[in-house]
Image 1: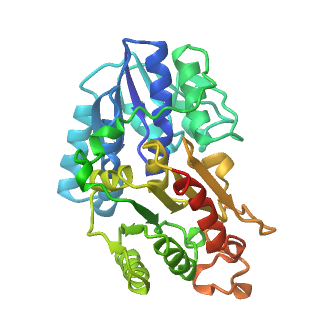
Image 2: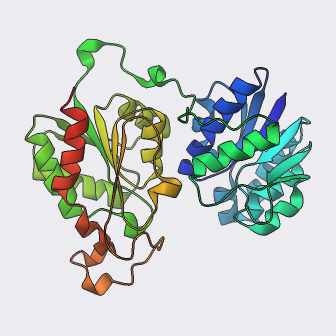
Length: 346
């Protein structure tokens, strides 16, 4: 059975879909998947052994030069690749107008979420097979539920398995191994940023235990923050700019991770790395990092989780530049206590 998955972005959403493939492969041994995904995240499906072909989708890049000649030719080549095969089933696992449009272009029967379940209801008009999935559950379970209905097997209740072989990223030489933590300090929303002062304090607590810290970054603001943290204490390394596979290698060899709500935090969970994730305005019950040794620290601030990109309480925040007063309830000491429970018990 040959199935096409439409799940283009974001990084966390793509990772959330992986356990559904594992479920399907256990229930239908001969199943294989192709996957349409945003080009920046194309490596992730390739790490899953059940994915035969990845079809990169460059919507984020194309929309910046919508009427350029190179965009036209790239779009033409994408459609040619997309329509080169007829699939036994096409599953739109995203439920957006954008993903539904791509689903409509592919060849084969189309399945997706119904009017009440899709994130954008109009997307459901494209599908021949429509399924109801409760929105008030974790995104991983929503994907697992959709796949089980669309492919006709009983929904497993087991712990999610992402199907990524962690060994491909780990250091082979024992001599080269070192104990280090990774701080995933970068994220998209301003309100999801843990205060920089807290990162500095946590770095000092970690290095006092003789542990090293590695700091990845994805843009100039994150690089500058990493450099300020590194300048505050010893044993902190600011990594060079890395691609996704290189970041995965760093994460896979870490003793533990500390993360805000970010896609790389979900990657750490998929690699089964002990991780302490910090949540302010977002809800880990719906989108938190799931896997082995995953600890969620959530704010006790009265208005959380608000799911807002801008905080209405900015003027009352001791961290005005961060737009996130709710993080004042998650102190560096509290985070270190959770981290210590993961790394010091070995």
